[in-house]
Length: 293
Image (cartoon, rainbow, N blue to C red; front, side, top):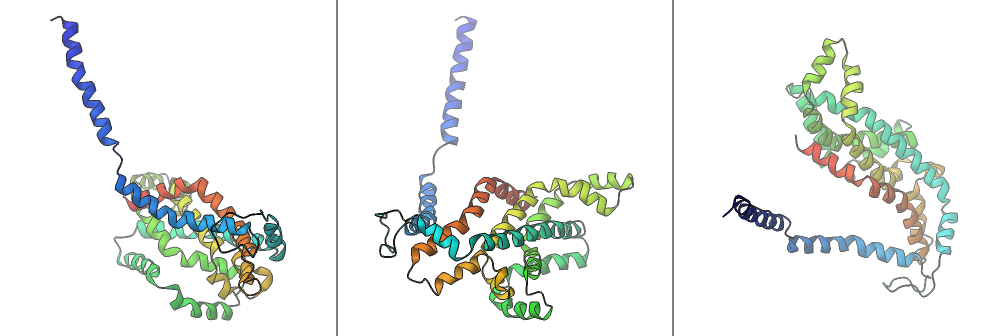
């Protein structure tokens, strides 16, 4: 047997081994796929029902069948009745300012706690803020409404502050794990060069927190844009009402006109859905980086 034949014979088992390994590593888990498919129906079925109902007449609403006539004017009627541009502008202002305040304050608090976990006071703060996540909102809802009224913060500014404060617990949980994975040697080198704590945070730590900041921002956007209870108990001026509050009119005066109500829901859902579709990879990667040190 020649040397070329020997080398070819020795290469054949390797090729088959790689092929078997490739098939084994990429085997489909049909049980897990079936579970995911069933859970996806809990989202897809209501979404389908919402879309087809928004395009029907009131007499056809309530069924899963396609509309006989496509009533696109339902979107125009809902747009005009709830003054969608005004409500959307209020929601956008509150959401954008809440996201900015959250990123400017919660990330710095997370940095302070993460770098001082060896101290008893900061460990207490960490567990205290985490405990906020387990307090039902219905327990603190009325005290918050009374407090905001007493402080004359029953307006958009007060609502922005509430989103910033009430989201502190979950934001710390996400950010602290990521901050502790950043080498302390980077900060020590900056201190040797004469940088203070504020400069270290804004020039080193904050830029490195890009994935986590994206996650926190997207979660805050979803919360502030879709929230109903906090604006309901906080905002007293009707001109400041957000989209969820403006849509509440359909529950009183248009209880039988479901197509108009569902058209309004789709218009309110569209902007934040588009944002999430394009930014979901940052949400997933940010949560994973924050959960694993």
